[in-house]
Length: 344
Image (cartoon, rainbow, N blue to C red; front, side, top):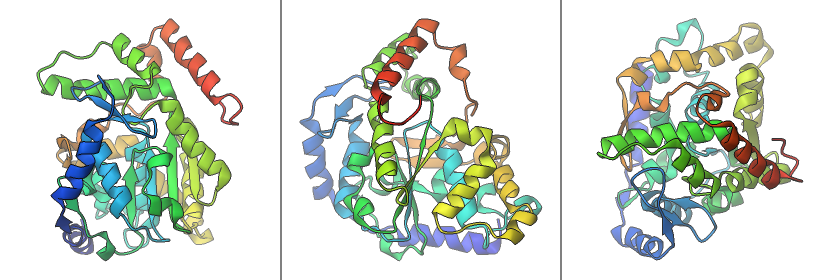
């Protein structure tokens, strides 16, 4: 990592320390404890937020504190996804695209921050990293443009994100069957770590179809951001993971345009777009030192960065789901998305 990078990121970390407010956290924890709850994929129970989505207690409380305390800026960019839907890739692409002038991506990008820091360390989640542990971080000191991430549905975004003109949201959705398989695999890693038996896929699929998945139901989450994109495409950019895989360069160009930093003709001619794609490719990211040996602290524990990289392929569900279960998920998706303009 270059000397400028070493100075930049830890300074942002220090600036964001802020204060603690245990009373505020306890207030929202008490609210969540009164909500209906059900078993989930992992060892944590899922609580039903009053706006219709499910999650474990800590992220819901974090989302509530973020809603109450976060002050957005017109230059902010928020990455929004369901878990295991291309979040790590989108964070990498956004960071590399926005910061391509101070951190060049060409010539191997030997000193690029992504070589030394995981994407989840460079772009942090509201509900898993920033608004956790009784903290109310001082984010006002962070330089523009600020980047944040969230898994919460559109209806529960911090109100200032929705209300602030200019603040951008980049959403990525993924085929529900691949999303399910990746989420199931990720959850089972933590079940085993906690001394539990892995959850059978049939049980995971039943929970998923019932809407009992983290930040789900899946279909409500996708439709929420899709509707926001249709209503204000300058506010919300909507990507599909499968389309990104087919033509990542085209999506990087769309991303750059959306955040107000389009690639110049000189950058196009010198291959900067392709360099961003190459730097953030699954193979390259999985092989970086930050992935192999790095760890990210989240509200539920310290997670090896390697655990965020599984296969990154489209259609792996066919190797796991029965034809009957795949047809059931497809039928639910067709019914939920009917009339939305969102193709299955």
